[in-house]
Image (cartoon, rainbow over all chains, first blue to last red; front, side):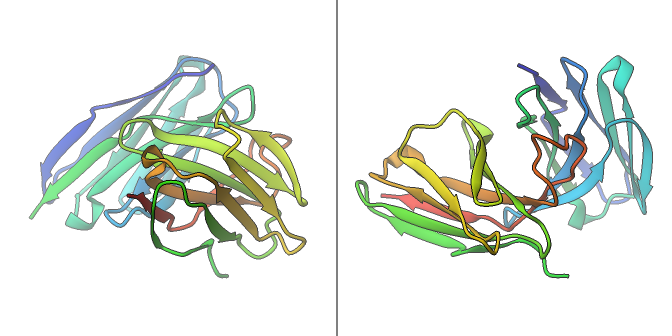
Length: 108
Length: 117
């Protein structure tokens, strides 16, 4: 089945810094999403992005399907950006396969 | 419109007991999927229901079961609880069944944190 790997596993930044999170997947995908899990466990949809580039405020994402990776960019980080960022891709059994996540801590 | 609602938010149960978790999807969504999240295994797919039928199932023992009602609300049941069942259980709502519409986006509830003691 498909493998989804995220890097880095942990990231600690000062408020105002920019960051890039990476998601590699082992096979072609039709469905790739980025989520933010806040400290209370809620998973928030960030982007549905099987290919191309999308932007939403300080966040943007790019998926290069032919090279099997996706990037999530966070600019001008705020403490509320802290949490775990997951990417998830759909495998051939139509199940969302999740990466292990990147734990982001933004220090004030 | 209202998001995905999961109840209860927190549960503490004893080994051997059973538990039922509830998930109400976004209005108009007909698919509900369930996931288990643990520190050791990460997020794992349990099953997906659409129009009251289980459409897909992950690799979990038969102690984990679910159902969906005509109003698309779903319940998940875990029988004979084990310590390892302690986890955050998340449900996701989507407009169409993920199996048939691979470009369908899933929206998650806040989860139910189950602790088995």
